[in-house]
Image (cartoon, rainbow, N blue to C red):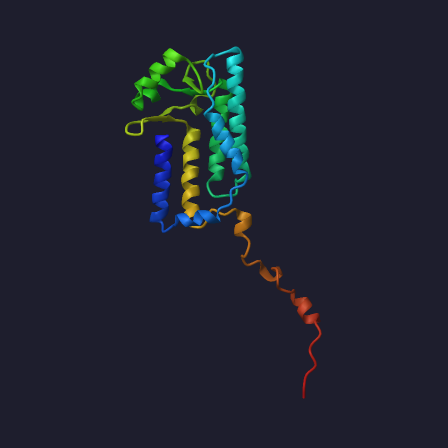
Length: 214
């Protein structure tokens, strides 16, 4: 949570530095935002800690539903600035989380982040949404392998980095008025000689001329 707040605060400050305004968020239209809310809500559901059987199945179902909803939200809004990076990050995280029944966390990354208490919790309490990485885990390079030292003290994955980069891009673009989808942004642009409201030259030539007055 500390890292997320830091990223959002940085994005807002960067947007202000680039002469953006938070009021321009009013122009952004997110589609199916409820999908994101439900998907994030499922991340808060307490899950069993067992590493096999029914406990593992429950974790995979809940986490799969969560990421499915988040991916659907990002896909529907992919035309907005930064959302394709968020979509890529979610895909990478889902790719490692679902087959492993949770996010594998590197012991080296935990130590680099200064979170000895997290390491003890993994050893003593077992796996929930995260677990200590072992040789049995697949796609280990996509797990939480990046340790961020104090004062942040957090371990993140490559997917998380893409998600945070996408959030910064989205916030800054929105504050500068450039986060609209490509379809909406194209409205009102010059469309050439066939743009709405104009007539082709042939139609103008064929139009009857008003009688001349003498």
